Image 1 (cartoon, rainbow, N blue to C red):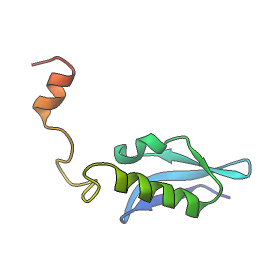
Image 2: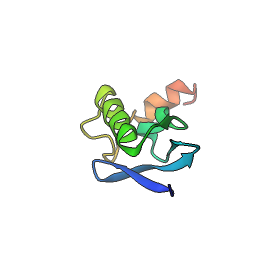
Image 3: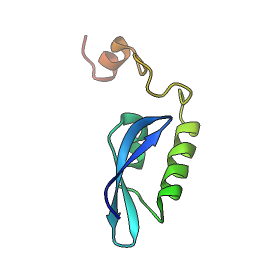
Image 4: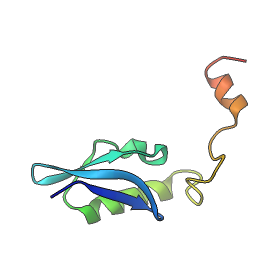
Length: 82
């Protein structure tokens, strides 16, 4: 198996690479970072895992919308900066 781009909702979210007889996922988008490094039996299993993950996280209806994520002030508070 060669490297393959993995998409969710038409947007590239990572790549899959062969790891022995399994497929390893390398995330390139933050909404799927929790799956980074996980291995799967095949590409369908990987795609299903991404779908389940995105459906179970908040904001899954527009995961890549511009401005999605915490407000700048919330980030500043989290890092204890003004």
